[in-house]
Length: 326
Image 1: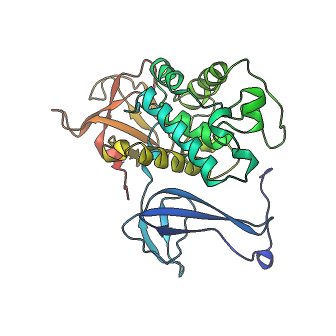
Image 2 (image 1 turned 30 degrees about the vertical axis):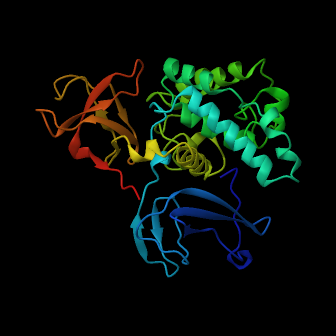
């Protein structure tokens, strides 16, 4: 509650909402302090939504109409895709995308000093090989890392990125805007991997473990990583747009992601309860990646392990539900 601010109902003049445009869902975020809206493209629009109407949600997945009637559930793929995954895009494709994006920013915002000479100044230029190397070493999806960096560093153009080689706002908080310097972008990305993600956020027994997806304030990295409740949703939106601009291969070939429908979902070394479990999930709604659900011991299924070296484990299919995608 220390970072919360309660507002008397009489002072609330507007509220955030979602709307659909050209097949995408947009989140129009209202700032009560600034009394203005900020919009971002969150992902693919669910089929139950119509253009020209407003929708509301507290978790970016379950939606109601303006009258308060529940209209449907739709999880955004990239918001639930575990960071412990691998993108199909190559280093070269990532670099081509980044340069095209920076050139587009220069063209679209010619009078904005933030984007002046973006295609020459950005700290993201040429980062593709590094992201794929880190993906191979630490098993963290390069597309997630790119999405986080775009969100946190304004496409590698923020002061923290330019002056301190800090693409992710590491060690910078709302109450302590410290200027943490890194010797290089490589050192910065490695710090994200070793001191944050693979140490505290992604391992099941990590200090801030709440699921391996970007998530929200209920599950995922967003629970503890950022004060912004929509941090995970915004980065998932970046990934959605990155994928679209690179050909849409990720969304066209989604991994089989499911979510726990019970607390203490257990992951085991074999499809039985004969041995002790390797680890468990503590909350409902935490996502996992299914490798094979058609084994002889069904409804047991083979799933990807969250423990290094990230092989496979087993869990019981009765305790997981399919992700409801748009």
